[in-house]
Every structure is written in structure tokens, then in C-alpha cells.
Image (cartoon, rainbow, N blue to C red; front, side):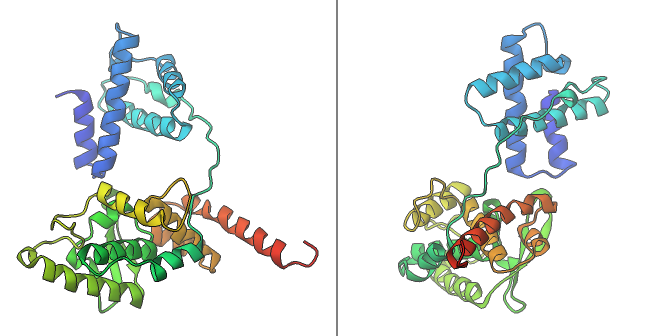
Length: 296
């Protein structure tokens, strides 16, 4: 077994990383290994020098890759070499000397509140199964701010209808509880009635959301669905499930929710990740000030 595969197995079984993270790490390290093979044929991935890593970073930058993506790949390699050092395969971690690339501060893209309300209250989703499914997915994303991977992993027993909360399995299999409103609970109940009528033979299916073919929903299915419906109300370049997550957090903050509460609902590991939404809130405050202040 290769050292790369050993490392991926370690992340999967010891650190319990998500499948998406494992795929990303595996691809990053293998692509770097290919680069070393092509550019430095006398060296293997276990014996690289820091300057080789820098050459790889320059190569990635020249292809147009953004600093955030390059930094993520550096993180993958830093973890890989840390593992090799722990296993006494190498003496020094060559990636530990590599500094992350500076990245521009990009504010989260979000949909304005009035546009989200128009989508949820005025757009006709249709009265068939696909319509009920689409509405339930959009409403669930906006009501909870959950990630797309968390949505696709929801099970029938994830929701406590009596206590009105939902259990979500987040990154690194960390479970968190998100409160639900009466509206989203009613929408999910209505969806389940239609789903159980549509798929009588799937009564034993454990997952909450099923495609029109009766199979568990998947990331690309949700992305296409969200992209279509957000396209009806916004011209923003990004129309992904993560944009609804950003919209949820921004609207919550604008209505007075404290950062710590939003952090817990979103499942952020630290407050710094949540603070980026304050920039959008400040921009909103400036707009209100200019519109309302007599001297503005």
C-alpha cells in the first residue's frame, strides 16, 4: 500500500474525515506527486524540498487557480508530511516552511431578504412530487443554514416533530441540533405525506429527501435545483446551496441574532469563520444610515 493511501485511510478511520474531504486530500496529494514526477524525476514525494513545493505553487498560480484553492492544497500536503514525520518516514516536514498565499477578502454572496421571501411565498413550485420536494429543500436550507452535505444526509429520524428541532451531522461527524419553525415543520410534514403516497414501496427508505426516481438525493441534484430557483429571483453569479447558507446567516444577523448563536447553528468550529457575515451587516447598516439620516 502506498504512503498516500495509508494517509487517506488514517484520515478516514482515525480522524473520521468526511468523504468529500478525503476525495480532496487524495486528489491534491496525487496531483502534487505527478508534478514532482514530471518536474523533478530524480525525486519522489517522500523526499521533496521546500523549493519544489514553491515551484508547484507557482505552477498552480499560473494556471489561474485562486489563492484560496492553492492554500487548501497546501493544507493537504502539510497534513500529509506531518503524518509521514509522525510515522518516522521523514525527519522534516517540507511543507511546514511554506507560507500560505495572501487572498483577497471576498464577502459572502447572499440573496437579499425580499427576494428570498418572494421565492418562498410567491413562486409556484407546483403541486406534484417534484414541486413539494423542491420547496421542502429550499425551505430547509433557508430555515437552518445547513450545508449541502448535511442536507443530503438527513434521515427520517433526524427531525423531532414534537420538540421541533433537527439533528444534523456536520463536518468530522459532529452532531448539532438546529431549532425549527412551525412553517418548515408543516412543509416537511406535507412533503412526507406526498412522498409516502408517491413511493409506497420505499416505506423502509431511511433518508428524508428522495429524488423523483425514489433514490437518495445527491449534491449535484440539489445544486441544480437550487441554481434553477435562485435564478428566478436573482442575477447573482453564484446560485448555489451555499449562497442560501450565506443568506440565512446574513439575514439572521441583520435581525439581531448574536454571532455565537449563528456560529452554533452553522456548525462553525470558531467564531472567526462566522465574523465574515458582520461585513455584510455593516454594509446593510451603512445603507440604512444613508437612506434615513437627514444629513447623509
